[in-house]
Length: 223
Image (tube, rainbow, N blue to C red; front, side, top):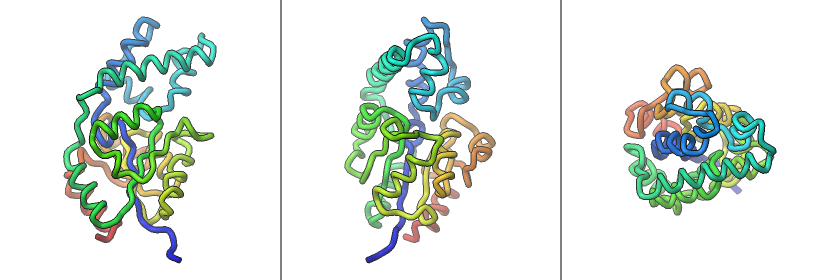
């Protein structure tokens, strides 16, 4: 019997693809009539990486919980309509996934997004089959920034945190992965280096073609 091995764990929105602008548009469709308007800077601080339950509790506090959930579902439906046919992978992603597949390194998606969104994104990118597991924060007792989601991702593929890498674009996601003991690369799609590094990222990159990112992946995966 071999012990836990290596794995690559990825957030989805803003990490595999830069979808933040579409999320902002969807939020504004649903939330602007309720007095909340967002640009990308505000969304990066107050929305990115947070669960729908926490967003609803914050911005729809005058609504009962079941109505909060219904409004958040409207927002996600609006996002899926906006995103349909428009999702493109971050530069270098497909090459990295090809290399991981060739090396036999399992990959896991770990997200606070609803499962419908996660599956739509992965299917739209044509990469659903590459992921051994898709961990949904809202289906667990605790989503990001709690480490439970990343611990579940590691468990799903019998991977050790110290032998694995995570890729995240939000503070809460980085906090979740690092609390699970996984070195995390921050992707600069919505936040800058200082914000990502301050949340605990070991390095940051603009995309998956970044030379420093590739060196760290090579060194950790030992391929």
